[in-house]
Each structure stands twice: as C-alpha cells, then as structure tokens.
Length: 494
Image (cartoon, rainbow, N blue to C red; front, side):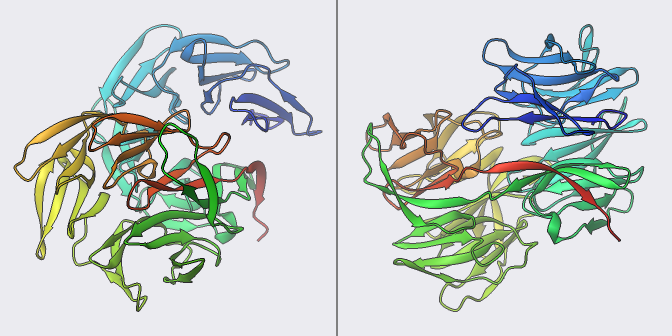
C-alpha cells in the first residue's frame, strides 16, 4: 500500500497467461487499473516516494532490470535503470540514503550490493556459496536481517552488521519460510510454507502462531489494526500415471490418486507406492493398494512431510527436518537412530543409507555405517542412486551431475541442473537413467546404457509439479490444478 493507505499495487496474472503485470486498486471504491506492461517475473514493489515505485523485473526483450514507474496521480510508462542477474522477490531495501539489494553471480551464488539504482554501486560481499538462496532483506537500525533458504527443507534468519559483513544466526527453522515483514520494533511476521502465520521475537527467538485459520497465507504485511495478505484458494495437486514410456513422443495421463485435496511426494519400490495426501484434512502418509489406499500416519497440522522413500522394507520419512521410520504393516512410526542437523537429501541405494547435510564447514555427503555416520565426500548438495552400485552426486560448485564408483573414481555426465533453482522433486534416477523437468515443461532423459539424451513430451497444457519413477522409467507426475489467489484483510476481533 502507499503511505496514506488509499491504494494497493499488486502483481497480477491473467487467466491462461504466463506473463505478469501490475494492477493498481483504489481502496475507496475498489476500482482496478491493469497496467499494460507485462513481464516474465516481477519482484515486490517498493515506494520510492508518494508517487513512484521501484521494482525488479525480467522481460523477454531486455532481460533483468530495475525499473521506476510513476503510479499516482496517473500511471506512466516504466523506465529502466540498473541491470540485474536475478529477479529476487523481496531483496531491495532503502539504506542510509541509498539502496541495498540482493543479487546473484552467474553461478547463482548470492551477492549483497549497495548504491544508487542509476549511478554508482558497490559489491559489499559474496554471501556463503553453500546457501540455496537469499530472497528477503529487512533493515533493523544499523543491521540487515536476511531470510536464507539454507537447504531445500529449511530456512534460517541471519543478522548482518556493516562494515563487519559477517552473517550471524538468529534462528534456524526446520521448514521453509516464504516471506517476512515487520510486526513491530522487536517482532517479525513470518509466512512459512504449509504452516500458519507466526510472530517471531528476534531477541528471545520465541515463536507464536496466529492460528490455524491463517494457513495458506503469504506476503503478509501489518497495518494498524489489520494484516494484508495473499490467500491461495483451492490449490490442489493430483498424481497421474503415465501410460507407456515412449521417448520422443507424447504420453497419455491417467488419474492415479486424485481427490479434492492435494496429493504429492510419491515413493515407489517393488510395486508398492506410498504418497502424501491431504484428503483426511491435513497431510498424512498413505499406502496405495490397487485402486484403494490405506492411511499410515497420524500427523498433526504442524508436521510437514519433506521427503518420503523406502529403505530395507520400511518407509523413511523426513518431517520438519527429523527422520522417522514407518513400518507399513504396523503403522508404527519412530525416530530413526541417526539424524542430520541440517539435512539435504536422503537416499537408500542397495540397502545403504546416504544423505547430504549442511554443516558449519559447508555441504557434506554421509553414509550410515552401523550406528554412526561417515563422511564420504565434501561439497555434495544432492545424492541419488546410480547404476552398478555407483552414486549419482551433485556438487555445490558445479551444475553437472557426477557418478562416483566404489573405487572413488568420478565421471562427469552431460546432465546439468541448477541445484539452487531446481526443486528436488523435479528430477530422479532409476535403473533406466536420469529424468528431469525442463523449462518448457517436457522431461529430458539420460540413458545409462546408450549415454544419450532424449526428450519425453508431456501432454500439451499439462504442467508438471513433480515427476517420479515406477522403477523402470517415468511413471508418475504430480499435476497442479488451476487455482486462484485473493488479496485479503485479516482483522483481530478480540
């Protein structure tokens, strides 16, 4: 909102469109004006003064730039200023009569800049390369607060003081946080993914939930007496079975597990399939049996399943950063004997458990050896199973996947994935090869035997949110349904 709270500016995507534009809405009469310029992606806007906004956007013609645009009394044509590498949602804040902003280098490593958007700029520091992403900045007096996505499973809040530029940990969350804003001088309004809104006292690290009715809300900002937020309505995902495994041809989808709530995270082994579904309220683990399914878990609404896989006949489940073993016959679930402090990705290969973990010295690959954990490699952010008892690795400093054999020999493969931007459920490996989602919504396939890359076309218009193996190739996709978002007021009626 602008300073006098008379209008709201927000990102808008027309039905059936892929591009975004700005929309300006008057709060007095709710009149809406859609700004004509469209972008591939947009950041949150900042009010430069009473009449202008600044924002970052990616356009098909000009790439990534900062923009200025007059909004009142009338909307003008935006003017480009400084170039950028990445559109970061909440990475721009005013700082000591200048601006401070986040960006990345060409490899995706986060950077912190300061300066004027039209003139001189100074690179303050390259932030740690082992962080997955930094997309939120807030100013606190002489300090900067940064919301960091450390791994694909968790976020952390850091404080950074200039000129020292050493990030100091305030709090680590065992789930992902999407966005934050100020509640008052000492508290932050936190919008986690798949959790209710929370208040965080940054001095005591005390968290207070605002109630279960605030789930599925994000981009929340407090104004006197109320909160403005974005609400996701009727967002569901369904699991579909793919008919056939033809390469270079289109495949047909058949409903596999579809309900009026979300279905996700499939784990397949020897004809058994476990998955996560919200059909009973909030997320629970289910086991598919033919056309039916059986509920295996009794999780509460604050327990988020982050990974699900089979290991020695049981299901291993990562819930809020803690690993559990779930017996599908008895439905008994208990903590696994070994735990990673900040886990990345787990995998079971030939009944051996491996996992990546973010440590104080960076990423490391571990293997369970009896009751203890042994470091196998350093710098590994993701691990999957390869052929002939090899491991498929992704290192933090390279986009190319690598095979590691039992003689410690490494072979680089012609498969490149950006681990900071690629979701862990967007790719898998099995006995036939490596499969990964591409930007044009097709699936690429690297064949272990022919060492060639081919393309599998998904049905036209069927966007995939995740892909999974059925043991011998691409067997399942998770497909999102069309959904709407609303901007809502939250009011405290107590």
